[in-house]
Length: 76
Image 1 (cartoon, rainbow, N blue to C red):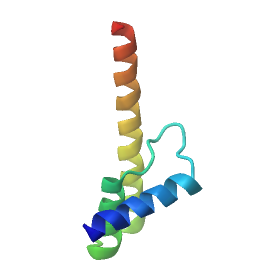
Image 2: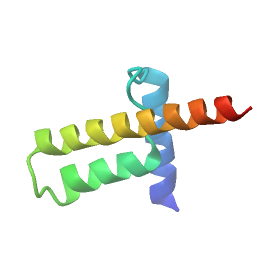
Image 3: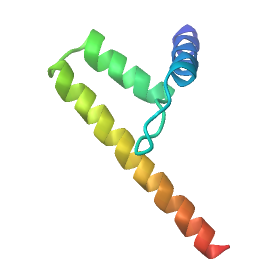
Image 4: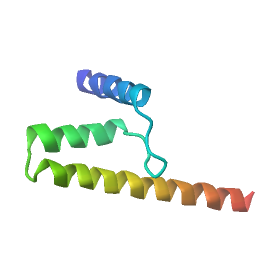
């Protein structure tokens, strides 16, 4: 429970300080958790690899979200 509260505070702070680029969704609690685990707890790959993967994933999610909204608008 405390860990989720920490993630929620970090997410809110991130959203208040930085706007996500147009091609990315904002950081989510799950994404912050993944980054924290892979960068701090268990760094298997280098930092650049993990941050690049996170960027790719968020860009992919933004494209999927935009496609979903376009499909819903076309059906209305």
